[in-house]
Image 1: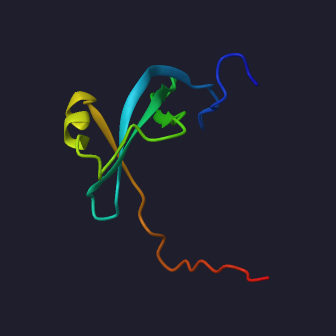
Image 2: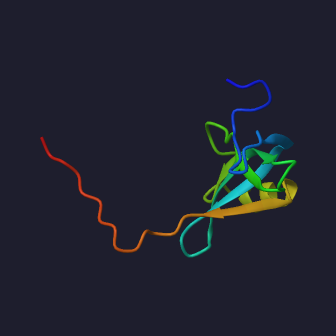
Length: 96
């Protein structure tokens, strides 16, 4: 693994950690809360691109936890993250 980082930016510079321990809120497709994750914010010092990587193995909280709103408020600021369905892509599973 390279000395500086294991994340390479498209501009060719290895990215550096800007902040450890940022909170990401995983959102459902409709934008409603789902899970809170701990991760790291990386940046490229040359072009300014930022990414979030290095997510923990388990979420900090899930939407059904009674204290989810309190944890969300305590862990602010929050980076939102959601997936959009891929249009026209059909997933098939092979059956043995």
